[in-house]
Image 1 (spheres, rainbow, N blue to C red):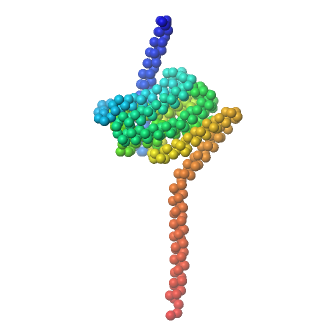
Image 2: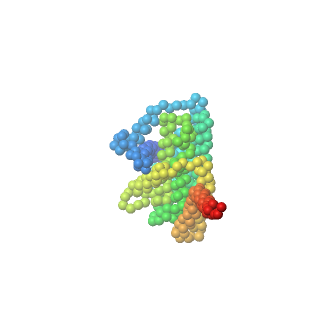
Image 3: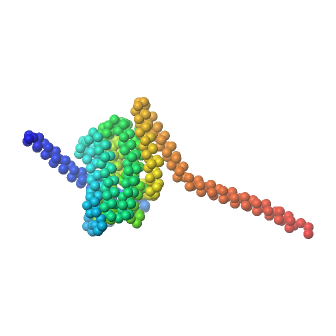
Length: 391
């Protein structure tokens, strides 16, 4: 039998973990409310609107009003659905989004449980949400929901590969999967300066992972049906989008920790620097939503397998070369920028191909028109000379 002192210590540890988890959930709920308000305001400014203004000062109470509205709406359960799967699916999605925050530090000592394999834990839990989306479509007993679930699984699996490869590259640079060690190793040189290609890949693939524009295929908000959640309503529908905003904040937080130095910064406390960097990245996410249209499913999948995955493997290769030959840091920066420039040029050529085709057709039409005019003007003098001669 364990001594009473050990039992008391273990009991205190359990109580501390429970309190910390509730505090984390409350903090993330406040973050979600702030993100919904901030997104509406940012999109309003981008579209020359004001955004929420009526509910509370500057519309600050609008997210609370939305939450209350969703909670009191009727929660419809389809008759033919598999009720157990239908109820469990949103729980799986939100739990997988919540649990990765257990080991994400906001400062060196501000983390619930720091893990030496923290990045491994995060990537392992992040993929569990895919199961929830597939189950949501399957349990709804709706063919459109099933198609939406399979489409979302295809997208998320495709873009999970470059995310994992970039995480491996950062782990190679830091020689650790501990997020605190990774952040401390960025003093004084941030990894965004050493491996800018990694940040680009991680951020773009992260947008696809959370289903943000232009990768919001499985949400399908502008289509007739709404992806795997087509049969969900009320609080259950809200849970999916709670997980989306938590994951959006998580992607921004991980990008800040892996490439922007996390809480490192002068004068201000570390938590303040962490929040500044994370919210700046979140604003970029909202900016992209207000700027780019949605990709088609074929464009989205082709971009993943033809661009993102090869670039991620290239990142692994150049990082291995840099470490093996012990080259200076600027060599990795140059290799990273070179890969980014080449792929950017190829994408530019691909996107501008229709424009060049239209220009070629227009030039050909103008040339043909000029030739016709020249031929017509050449015929007129000949006709005039014949008509003006002696009869």
